[in-house]
Image (tube, rainbow, N blue to C red; front, side, top):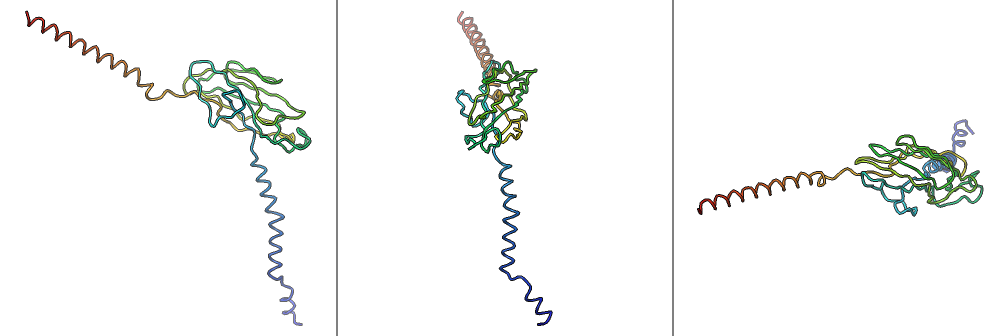
Length: 223
């Protein structure tokens, strides 16, 4: 057999190429997809539950300006517990510890905080920092952290600043900044209403003055 024929016989057939390509997909691409999926796992959410029942509102709650409001802070990492070894080598949604920072912005003041579990808290200006540990079993599902009392002016907001939690596998996750409550700006109607009332009063006064002058002229003519 010639060297040319030997070369042709040693070339891989198409099925072999497909098999090799499939192995590359299995060995390289699928682990990458798995890693991306793990990176996109939902992080715990910190929020104000208006009914103090753990129910998460669909959007940041609006509070009234100028009066003290008590906010019920909760954290929810998910509802699936680890099958074993939570807060060690767990694979569930447990939150095993937290170090959270919330800040009043644009005229919103943080007045006080009462934690719902053991931990440390400190208020400095309009910033509240509080932490806690649930290292044995962790916490799963909506769990109350405490009550914070705030007071603010229109345009104010209470923000969760980037904060740390310890997950079921004792890894550290960073929670992104999020708005917890807002103090709404006055609407256009409420801004214009005082001026409209004043204009209406002035118009009534002018009409009353003209009416009295007309009555006075009529009395003089009758004489």
